[in-house]
Length: 341
Image 1: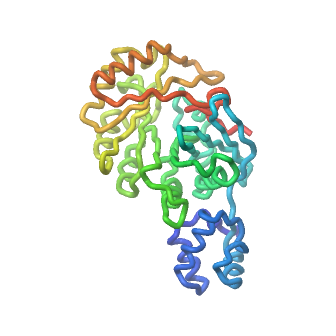
Image 2: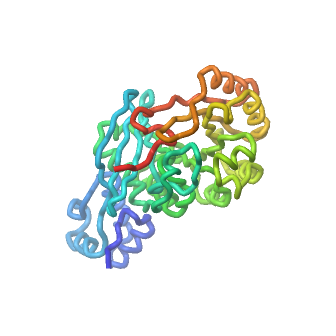
Image 3: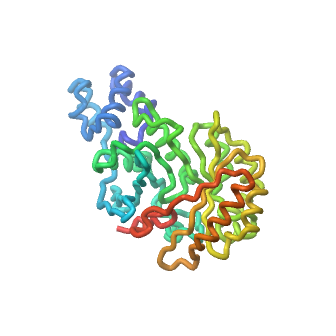
């Protein structure tokens, strides 16, 4: 029987392991710190534990992470990492430069089953969910093996896959990312993006406190049904009801992501419909121009069209930010990840 990976375990699970070995429960916190704060890759490095404890743990569990196969650099400074998983599958993560920090865009699945027409990842279909160690492992490896690693301040779960379709593993990974004994990120610095899985949105708001971004992309059900098959199960009225119920503490706001596609959803009337649709929801909008990829039938709208769309939302008193496309020359931009080795 294959030994479990300790990096797939929560603090409580490591505590249970430690006590089953007849050792003090607090040792689990030491183990977590060795794994996530001191970058230990073997039990031999955990010198605050006795040799007996280290030997016993080595008999029960392994320490394993994904490996970085290669890193590509974009002309705009964005970097894309290709990770190889233990079973030979590949996934991708992206490092996005900011003014004084970097944002890591992590994957939660190998592929994606949601089938959004404008997304290259979705066209490849779903291979499998990622384990917690494969989600957090992207972060630990980027931090350890890239020059930018120490300056990563924000994490967005917006890479390959639908995070809420891999709910349990995603939430466990977030708890490790935010644990004082794990990677120590503030929940204010972590954003989960979803295409709109309503039951999981409601559950997420009860289980943990993180920022939520909704991939919207159309102001009505007819077009959203065509672009995003998930809308046929959870139409806009149902989705927006869940968004209104999602708890956002303090002055935080929900984010709605809207990918602008030429002639599809980018007209002035579409902007006005969107403004009416979101009325009463404390939110901001991220406007993203379509990132074209080989085989895509959709096109990027003109700058004039995009600015006009944004201005209408601003006139309706929304915070509407035009997000610069990053890394499109290396297929690292939103909707372009494929995990091809």
